[in-house]
Length: 88
Image (cartoon, rainbow, N blue to C red):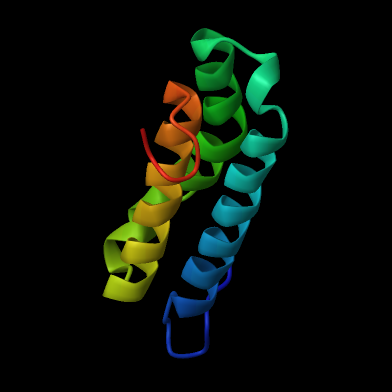
């Protein structure tokens, strides 16, 4: 957890977004190797753990961080559902 001098969570939130995007990109590397159940397990282990760690801090997230995490979440769901990067 990274806290700035003025008790701002911006650095920590930026780090969460960076880790989250990195983990979501890892999912795509094993895209054809797992069924839906395996993909969900991998998502929960790699990506879900990033969001669940100190998740109360996410309430302080700004619009930019929320949008970035939402885009990552959308990409992860497309991966799990087998829709590809562009959607169905």
